[in-house]
Image: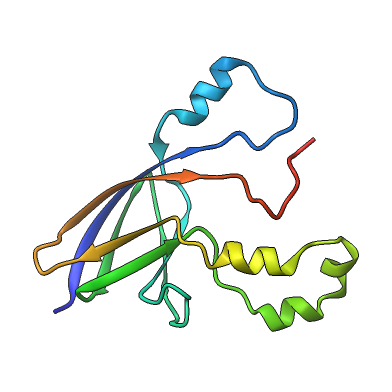
Amino acid sequence: MNSSIKFELTETSDYCGGALPPEELLEDYKTPKPFLDTLYIHQSKYRADDGVAVAFVNGNATVQGLVMGEYYSFLSPKFDVEAMMQDETLHQQGINIGCLHQENLTPVFSFIIEDKTKKLVQNIHKKCNPCVPPAQ
């Protein structure tokens, strides 16, 4: 059975900068805000399927066509590892492609669609990317 699911997402995040900011700013990062980005949903934990990109407006989106089962959500589109391995610019910048690949396969959350599922409410916590040094 295909479902129409209403998503209501908020986000919190880690501080990924350099020097420690004021406490008020750190608290702001911990405060849930509407998710305003694109979520990439896959049935395959390893992103072996095409998946679907869902754009959120003010924390909300409706997704059609999800069948019952387990899903995995990601914050970035899946990428072609072979193409990245051939990219000299990435190598010159010292970017660890293996790390990026592993990070690209790490879901921010998973969820299960059942026959009765009509709505999903979730907070996404954005962690610092371990493959990229902190901002200076």
